[in-house]
Image 1 (cartoon, one colour):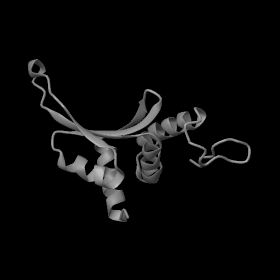
Image 2 (spheres, one colour; image 1 turned 30 degrees about the horizontal axis):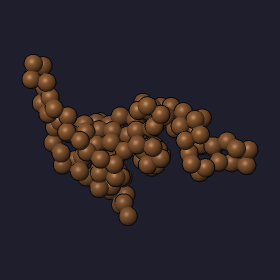
Image 3 (cartoon, one colour; image 1 turned 60 degrees about the vertical axis):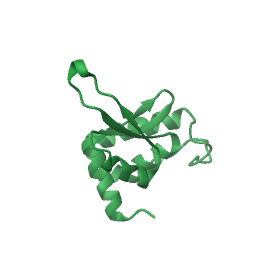
Image 4 (tube, one colour; image 1 turned 180 degrees about the vertical axis):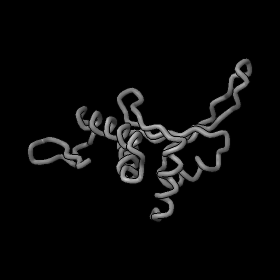
Length: 121
């Protein structure tokens, strides 16, 4: 079970380093770091995957690690952290969640009697 401290850590980390968006047709929560350790913590809390992105030598960019989680699991991360995020991040999350709901990518969950997904933002 995730502790309140872990949720607060994740909210702070993703507020500063995260991104909430769509990748293709799937919602995504993502963060990139040169150090792998914070991403391993996010992986342990929420699942997903970590990959290595090689830096471009000509641009003098370092290699970095990228953690991401997609689909319904990403929506779960977003809704879990929503109330702890800044207005800017909340707006990003709302946009992704509403787009996800409109596309019917909810696997039948959280659907009201009228067939609509209800989110109380």
